[in-house]
Image (tube, rainbow, N blue to C red):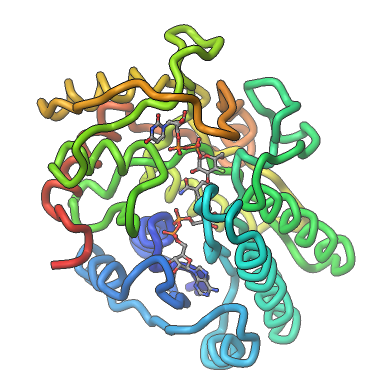
Length: 339
Ligand code: NAD
Ligand code: UFG
């Protein structure tokens, strides 16, 4: 049985991926400093799967402490989720973002090299397509110009990983470019639990629904899109997690560097999200229209053909599922993981 190290595995996408990997017969080890998560998320993973999960509280930038994880476990592959991800905060604190996101990547690569771990899957983002590329995005497009330091960290980390794989022919790298993950596990036990005021649309909608926020502001209604609001490729986090299982199956058998978009290929507008959430849950979302948010692109969506062709992966869940599962999580856990 192969063992997968989930760096940042207590977070939103990492916890859902842990469930799917365990259900597919993999052993997982979680390393996280809980800077944007909590140990309770891992406990919930254990409840869902009925398996215990070996967990390390470690700052992944700290190469020495990270080494313990590699010494104590025979790791077959690493999935690197450990990053800071708030776009606005990255504009205010660029050095924090560059330090955390780049250093976690370098520390993981150093340990992998030292302990001969040759498979790395990286949580990248559609943001690397930047402003220049037309939608739908395909993997062979050149990385573009980002509008914020968070995006640049993803561009830089992709480059670092490609260079490392070029230098070490045994090192395999899969770059997974996520589109907009939303939703939650159908059990309602794990989900997205942002700290403070949510930056992203769906957690904000969910907090309005549960009464934690008064109203949603829709950022801009004068875009060149069918209804004037921005369109995104929202993907159910469980579909996304299953994409990681397929990527692990793949990387354990193949060598080299590959890039995959993980999206549905179908964009929805902000207004459509609000309407679908209301229909799927029966809960009204109080909302107003406001100014555009700096840095937002009118549209972002994937061409998801490559993941289907190479990994045999495609999304299965609908937008209605995404809304229902978000609400199931939020209504069962109005304050997230806090009791
Ligand atoms: P998250 O914040 O829920 O998870 C990230 C985890 O990494 C957290 O548990 C956090 O505590 C941990 N972490 C951060 N820095 C660390 C460090 N130095 N040492 C140890 N642990 C550390 O975010 P998520 O939504 O699960 O995203 C996971 C990855 O996917 C991130 O790299 C993010 O940039 C990327 N991504 C996310 C989205 C999205 O919309 N959620 C979109 C594209 C890409
Ligand atoms: N939006 C609102 N009101 C809100 C929050 C968001 O109208 O309160 C709108 C945004 O303007 C945008 C859409 O909802 O049009 C989606 O916004 P999100 O913040 O949920 O998602 P983004 O597409 O802006 O960002 C996401 C990830 C980033 C990643 C980016 C590109 O959060 O990490 O996709 O991949 F960089």
